[in-house]
Length: 401
Image 1 (cartoon, rainbow, N blue to C red):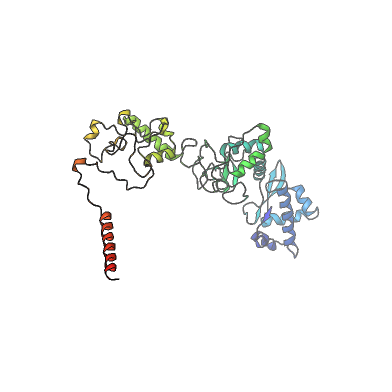
Image 2: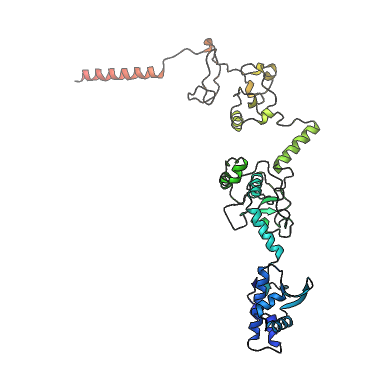
């Protein structure tokens, strides 16, 4: 039971002053009498109804008829018949004046508290939905008791006891905005059950310590590799997904692959082995086209034709000889003319020996007959001039001591 802040000056209260039996005590006496009757009705959930016995208890046998007459004339009460007996109903059309909680409202709140504390309901629901709200798809915060992102449980059928099928994880913002039983204001229809639900470290600890889970042998989900902040989308709970746990971008990618198969075109990645290729192998092959792997799944998705044995480096085919240098396949590059059997050309980088160099291919060695005759090197000529200079200087000192 709750009185409004302005109830002391409400027109119903001031109407008592117009009664012919009013004196200095009647206004407070009637208001106190109605307050006791309202408290009795709220405690016993009679939905604003006051019986004759309750009125006698609150007003006294000598004053009950006077107070009932004045309260009815002022508008506090309305005479009604309940089970063939005369009763009185308190004013219920102005919650700012007097507000009582109805029996259905109180019983529904008690049912919600019972369901929220029933491990046979909440443990299976948490294991099924994880930490993602089934309405907006965002991660909830179970450690918070207030706030829009705090974790709650939502009854899909309001007013009825919950079952595992009619109970879902929801954030407080979505749960409190669907009091009429429809979908929340900021969300659409209910999202499907995620295939791989997300569990925060808090939920993992809670499930691990739960006694009901231990008794029933439920498996604790693994801890997440990446902790997602409450309020961000949970994996597998993206709004707009039509299949349980399927991302919208996966649907569009599957649609494109299906369209290519129906029109006869070859999809980019058709084999499961190519799809299972590791990302580090892809990047390594992209940096070095000449590097081949012994694993069958290391073939790039963008090279559907395998390398034939007769097109290995050094075995140029007839077709490659007629191709421009810019169009030749780097895997089938002709052999270096300076390469000798049992030796490798000096090149820096991944395929080289590790020694420094410019990386350019050296020009072919000219024949021995075309090479110019060797002449005295500049170093030899320099040594000759220096030796003659020393000899001349020494002779000069001998002639002129």
